[in-house]
Image (tube, rainbow over the protein chains, first blue to last red):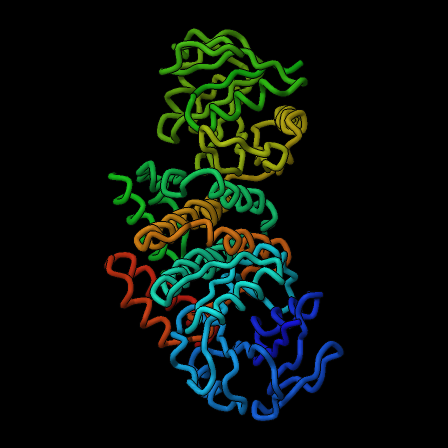
Length: 248
Length: 248
């Protein structure tokens, strides 16, 4: 049984620990965290150098700290992977065999996930480690994709636009709705349907709305309704882009 | 049994006809369309003035044409409603009793919908018509909300931001992914989860990503990857708004 240690207790580390703990096919060995004192499921280690031998060390820290964390691992010749969408594996110390195990999903600490649907983007310096990462993904019931650094960066960028930016727009909508004491729940079926559509229609073909139709009066009215200058400007910028894209 | 006529064969009219036709509690009487010749389910009328007597006339045309269409209805004293999120009912000819029946949903002609989840925002000049619109919503297994014009405009604006703008961002993501010959399907579990979250977490609290963390290196890298100046500028604008909102 493959022995895995997780380094980091942010959103990704937190969920990977859950995932490994709940897998019958993987041995969750140790968890490095600066802040956690203990965990009922796994031995918690507060110093990286204190981590003992494991088959795979999975680094789940901010991109800027990956190199430093990899340096501090005292073992050598092991498989060390990070979970970043935007970092090359060669930032990590080459005393270990290096790779990437990037789960393309949004993680919030206290939000349960349907883990089986997570695509894992994997990459490794050598063929055998790539096979190990494939097996690790399959042992988690996840789907793996063998993705190189350029591709991974592209996916990460697209993920930020699809996830972080749309979530931000949901927040903007909620604030607009809250400002009139309306119920954000009224909007949820629409938001669900917006996403249902992408499974059936190309989003580029599915575009609707005033900007798509070049409905100038409606857009002008919305601009006047938006008192927050930044949000008004965002409304105008995106509407302009939609108008131009669809030839209005 | 309430007799309903639909005016207009755009996305909304098309789906309302489906909806009424499939309801056992509503009689779909006539459908006005400039372009359709016939339909197996309902009598199609190509001139508004040729519409015969009905209990409710539902105008599903572009906002700018609502007033004109309402003028051309030859019947008087009937209930006439439009389906717009951004138009007052009093733009319609007052020879009829006026109201609003605004389904807060995104309609694409050939996309099947789970109709039961559509919230309908209703408004009417008089109490009895409001009751009729409530019953019409319930007969369709939809949920109704009694919403005045100011509130409806606000919901519509929020809907455009949550639906049209996020769909546009999905399209931008898809183009980025297509440009490297990657598979947009890899991103779909993430997009699903982005929306699942809004049912459990306030989107304002659920925000993640490089801008939320003020990860300057990643954002700089993404800006360099984006060769399309407009999309680069959009990336920078939204990232800046997220950074400022979260105090970075």
